[in-house]
Structures are given as structure tokens and as C-alpha cells.
Image 1 (spheres, one colour):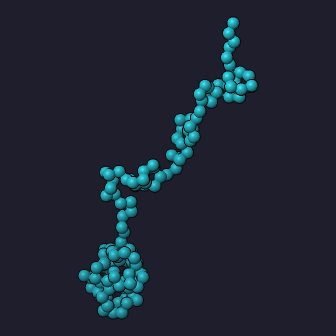
Image 2: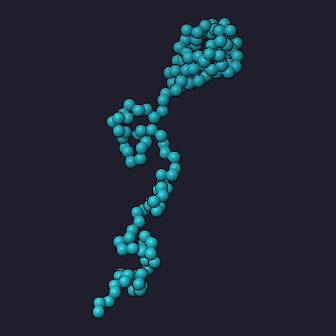
Image 3: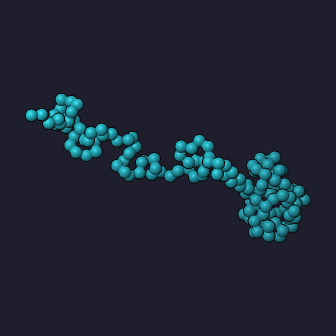
Length: 143
């Protein structure tokens, strides 16, 4: 009569320390690191960085996304009352503001917060509709 082969691989009796039943009690059993019984892996539960170049395991974007830019360039925003530091009749440009260290970037949008008390000449700015009205009421010229 042949002996029944139970739990081979140790001196621990029938189950050889593998416990009873379940996935880890079977022959050849191993569970991948990060496997949570069919549930999402822990790193899949957290929010990802958006954008084609930020896909997991991807060093460079797919050729389909090669013209994709992750962050769009935004115009620097400046309020009307900031221009009161200039003298009357001065021509103000975004380059002047950049030289003074007030803004960074080429495009500057003027927003309507505050009051303009000087008659200035604005050249090369983008204005919100309310800022344009306020500036024209104060006697400013917009080019």
C-alpha cells in the first residue's frame, strides 16, 4: 500500500505550515506583491498627475501626444490701482512692468480691482471689460 503524500516539504505534518485552505495553502501558491485579492492595487487608488506625459511607466509621451502641453501659458494679471505709481502721461508697456519686477512673462492682463487716478497710455495689454471702462473713464488711452 502506497502512503498518502500530504503537505510535502517540512516536518510540520499535513499542511507543512501553509495553513488550511485558501490561496496560500495551495501547491505553487504565491501572491504578487501589490495584489489585494482582485481589488485595486493601493497605488491605483490615489489621484494621478494629469496629462499624456504623466502616464504611469511612460518616460516620454506617445507620438500622438507629442504636441501636448501640460500647463498652458497664462497671462500675468495686474490690477488697475497698481498703475497709480506711474506719472501722468507715461506710456506703460508689459516690458516696463517686467523690468520693474512687477510681472513675469510677455502677456499681461489688466483687471478692474481698484481705481486708476492717472492719465496713462497703455500699450500691449489685454484688458477685462470692466477694467477697460474704468481706465477710459479715468482718461487713459488704450492702444
